[in-house]
Image 1: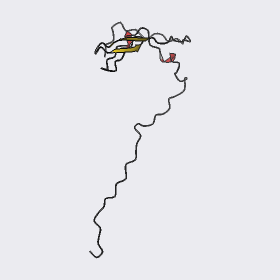
Image 2 (image 1 turned 180 degrees about the vertical axis):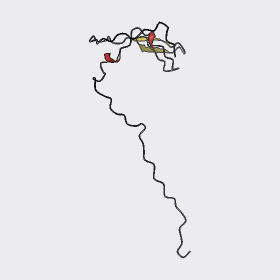
Image 3 (image 1 turned 135 degrees about the horizontal axis):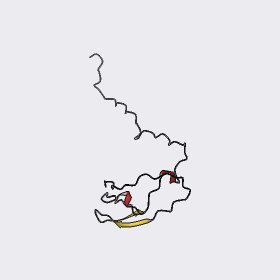
Length: 106
């Protein structure tokens, strides 16, 4: 993990923006660890071969805030409750073990 620079930006004031964000730009580079040719969005990369990821601050533009996400659910709506995963399966019934048969009169 890359340490945060000392001059890190403080959270900016949140203003409701109605201006749509420009679409992300597809960018290409070589992985800094293994040299694999990789593609990313706005200068943010992740290598599928060795797992290297560059820091989000190296991107070409700021990341959108959650309130700027066009797919974000409306306010007041909650996420549906998630079912436990993996699904709980009932325990298998014990198999009948064949035993010695009792002979009459023994």
